[in-house]
Length: 422
Image (cartoon, rainbow, N blue to C red):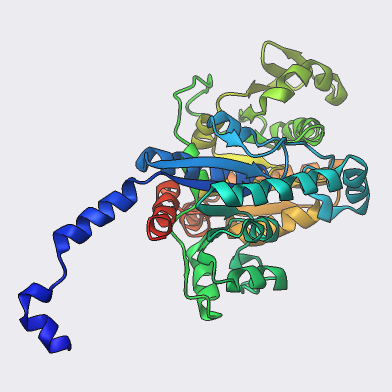
């Protein structure tokens, strides 16, 4: 039969007809549900969503953020499938039994039931699911009854130099409706493929696509090293972290004296109104976007709209954050981490992040920073900025651990490939 097909032209497939069918199918309206569970996950998901809608105008999207208010999706102008609510843990309930209790008291069960009902409803109106995160988004993707792709942004083989999914995750991966497993780095993809999940690939990490400089004037002295302060995005923890970083700035200025050093803080907008109240807690003053310490002659210029510019132009970052630290490392910057009181940025979180991001990250201390810890961190900052070979290694390490820009379009193409083959 095969040879007959080859020698008889009238039995060859009509390629023009097949092409028209393909175009017709791709022009049909398709709807994708984006599920994610956290600030960084929402950021990744929303960037992929925007790339998908930009490249494939026949696609519609709806979002189901499981943690927080889904602000990244709201900024993208996307419909949210169900009312959102920020819980006390901020998505980090696994780090504290007390935070788990607070979440339950704040309505976690009712919120989860709402989200389950929304996922089921979207299963009737959508064609495909893109789940960003770890186990929880995968379970919700499974609940929809739709085919889905998993972007394992919360997991990496670099954590343990191996990749062993939790049993829940493995169960979700083995579903015939799981069309693609997408990872945040090439190393993780290879490890998962070795475990038999052949539909696994790495096509990019979207967090690097949101770092286009805006040419914001940071009022920098060009010959003086600049240190970025990354205090985190969740209040009130970010406010407490910033006070601790102000004290670290004092230790750094004393370590560098008489050489000058300059500081720029990339803050969430909700923290800016609190600066006048926070400054006295550290023995500082505040006026017009500037924290300053007159006795030591140092200052910190604070911005809520210059995150990308600060990361691109800094020589080193003081990190007490999650995604922002990853982005700094991706740009080739060294990061020094100190501990706060949590709940997010605890030693458990910082140590895991150090394993994930490799040599670019140095963690000082295991408890909330003491004056001695701050002095040690200041010495580490000065030592790091003077180590040229190490700084060169950070640039190479950033490409390996985080990657270059372009991940959003790569993931959008991966979704479209599955979506238009349904």
